[in-house]
Image 1 (cartoon, rainbow, N blue to C red):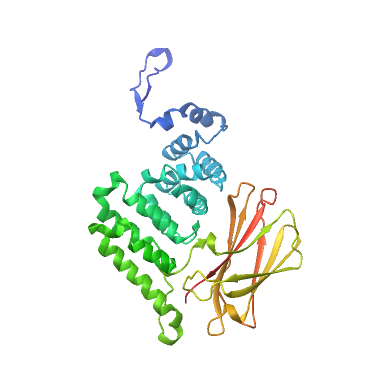
Image 2: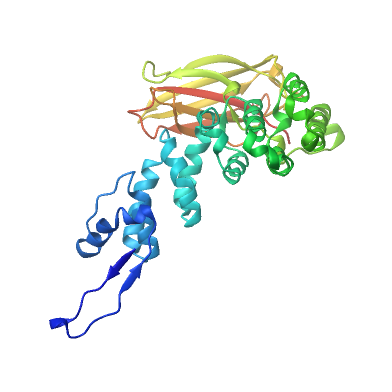
Length: 357
C-alpha cells in the first residue's frame, strides 16, 4: 500500500491521500518503475521481470511493457525451461501472444524434464491440459506421457476429483500412437482398475485398437485418421540418425536408416530409408530423404520429418518440422535447415514419423 500525502506550496493546499494497492512482485520493483517514468532507464532481471511487467501493464506504459516482453521472450528460450514455466501463466493472463508462444515452445521442447521433475505432481490442471493439446511436444514416447498423467491423477490430493480430472486429461493423450504392448500394459495398470476412470479409459482404448485394425486398410475402406488424436508428436524414439555437427561437414554423405512401415506404430523397423546430408555454407544444411520399396505400403509412404538440434548439455535448442509428404519411388523429401545458434549447436537428430491420412 502506497500513500501520497504531500501538500501544495507552503502547505496551504492539501491533497487527499492516493492509495496504490500492489502485489508483492510489484512492490519490490516500484522504485525501479518510478525511476523509469522519469529517466526512461531500467535494469530488468529474471527476478524482477514479472513485477515490472505487471506495473507497466497496469499503468499503460507501453514502452516499458514492450521492453519487458522482449526481455522475457529472449530469456524464455530453450533450454531456460524454468523461466518459461514461471512466465507462462503471466503471459496468458496479460494476453501477450509473443511471450505465450515462446514459453509454449520451450515447454514443449522440454516436456520430459517437466514430467520427471519433483514439481510435476503439484502442477495446475489447466497448464497440463494446455501442454497435452500441443502437437509439438518433444518426448520419448506417448506412453511416457500417459505414465506421467496417471501419476498426477492418482496423486493423493487429486484423487477426490479423479473422475472430473480424468475426463479432461485422458482424451488429450494420443493412445493410437502407443505400441500394442504398451496398450496392453496400460489395461493392467492401476488407473484402469478405478471405477471413476474405467469407462473413459476403455472408450479411448477402443479408439486406439480401431486405429490399429483399420489404418492399414485406409485406401480400401475410405476411412480417415487425420485428427490430431491420431497423429504422432515428436517422439525421440523415432530418431533414425544422429549427427555430431561440430565434427563433420557431412558434405555429400549418405546414410542408410530404418523405420517401421505404415502409420501404425510397431517395434520392428524393416522399412529402409536413405538420408543425404550436405552443408555447403553459412550453417545451412540440406537433407534429402529417399524411401526404398521396403518402406512403402501400396507403393507409397506418408511421412513427416523433424530435425532436433541439441546443445552440449543435450538440451533441445531448435526444432524444424517438415510438412507431411507422400514419398514414392520417383520423389524424395527435401529439407533446408539454417542453424539459429551455430556456436551452441552440437548434435542434430533426424526423426521420421509415419502419419495417417
